[in-house]
Length: 237
Image (tube, rainbow, N blue to C red; front, top):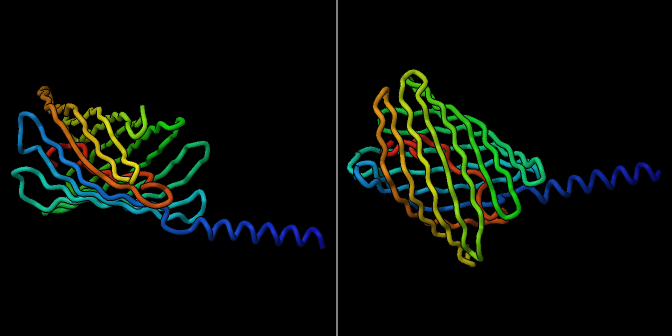
């Protein structure tokens, strides 16, 4: 009798925990602007948002959407990304993503793996993925980090690379910046960086600056991951 009572209590407790964990755990909305020093056509304005839904304390799903408007370049460019997320524990989160870059003449399908790790108040994130359309296949890679240095202030850095498999063509971006988070929730950030382009024996680079604002909300204070898009790496799409 005691055994059955303990088992029943355990099942009820586990079920209650799962029910409490279910629901929308966080979201984000934001805008950012990026401008290149020597080529105005590469500048862009990006509106983005995302939501995350917890299934259990360890498993959740996320969805992100973003639009991209490029300077002096016509077209409707946007991205959606879906994430499957597993909280390993000890500050480690692993996941996989699937999404598409959409443009006037078609779409590029993106998929890959991603992860995030916390080091006290600091975080580090990385992803590895592929992008495919009817003509080309590309490999993506990126790492980023954020480190709070004072009340509300933090520094961040990132590196992203895309390489076309069937052509000697690579693009990479490196950036550093700072962020200030208000007590009420919104945050503002600025970055400086350089983009590198390699096509065969030809190498060139461009300096850029970026500014943005976003607001995270929900119990999880935002989403675990954001968009995974070629537009985020290649200036001007």
